[in-house]
Image (cartoon, rainbow, N blue to C red; front, side):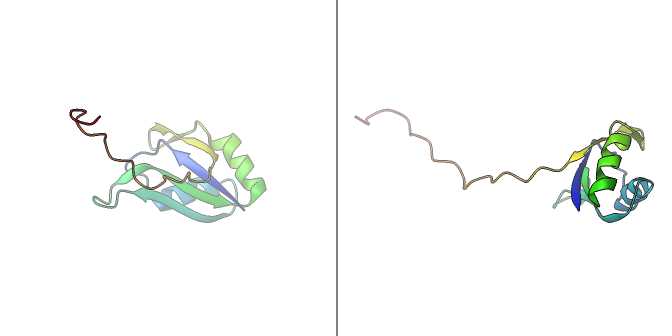
Length: 98
């Protein structure tokens, strides 16, 4: 099974819309449109899981295709990079620190 990233989605695209589009290529195991935690509004991207052969076909056939008025981007999803733990504090004002 392969996970695909689908970007540049219209704010109106639903998981059902995404699933229906990719189902024209092959079996969709899961479909998700990522939403903002606070507002519930689409963040403009999502993920699809398909069998490997169907996923490759979906990339070649659907990347750049119009979906709800937007040219969508479809490629293999990359593992999320670790964000690490917070940043270090600032160095202060620079006066009196010798």
